[in-house]
Image (tube, rainbow, N blue to C red; front, side, top):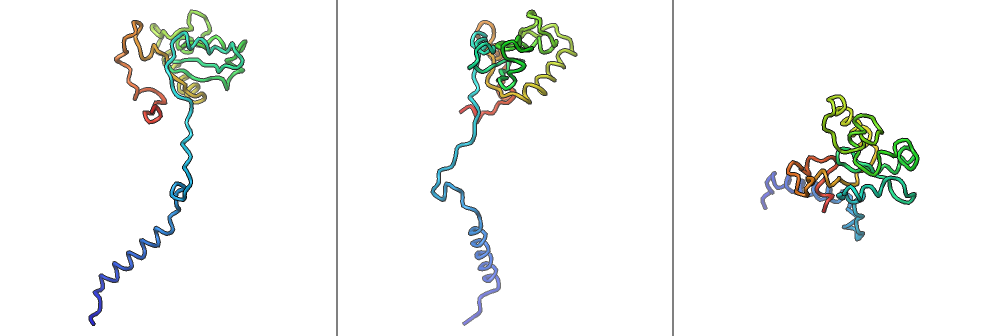
Length: 173
């Protein structure tokens, strides 16, 4: 009887190595009869009208505290000592206070979303505080309707969800 060709031995060794490698791979829990746990998700992102956002101004003890900057709504409840009732920055809550944040002002006339007429330095300060304070410290819970809709209720054609901070399409469905 003729001896098998040398390539046959290599193929057998490769098959054995593959079987051994597969035997050493940890078995996922779903394969072991256990149901996998769903991924951790935060609260759903939602759209807030001015009236809805005003309900979260820190006046009610059992309500979360929200404020918006640049049309992005943040849950600042963890900073209650700064944003709660009677706290130094409570005036910023329950509304989009982009102008006040940019100017570092608590003047009621500045507590608005309107950033027209701000200086380049104020706009830079707004972007800086938005990124380094609010986005870094507080969860995003939604967007203001004004960010997505024009004053007349028509869609804001400049709004692109993929350009929004903290937006991930897979989290929306």
